[in-house]
Length: 164
Image (cartoon, rainbow, N blue to C red):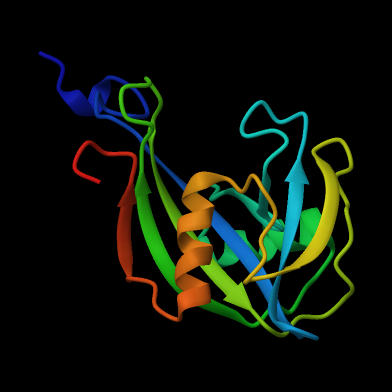
């Protein structure tokens, strides 16, 4: 008799996909600003503004290391002084996608000038005041940005579930 452990890499269980997000922050002329990218050609939330750097956590990699790697790969910054903000358990309700766990970080110090390194996926990279974000912003990311702007983000949140 075969057990669940012999069925393959997911052992017959549902999958939760981890991702790491980096919001670079700075003080601008009118207050705090965040660096956002305009997504394109990704198949997910194209033409929405999103975290300047974000991506899946790879097998054997911590969310912190993934945030550092994604920032280097997507916007060319390194030595990021990351501050953990929140973890968000996310789904799209009735749509048949894997559930997600998103780890959000902010940073106010890093090395290098942010620039678009993946022009096929990023149409624009721009600083915006937290008090004047562009539209549209990826909805679950907007929840976190609203929390950063207000000064309070829960350590854990959920998004897209029936009880939200």
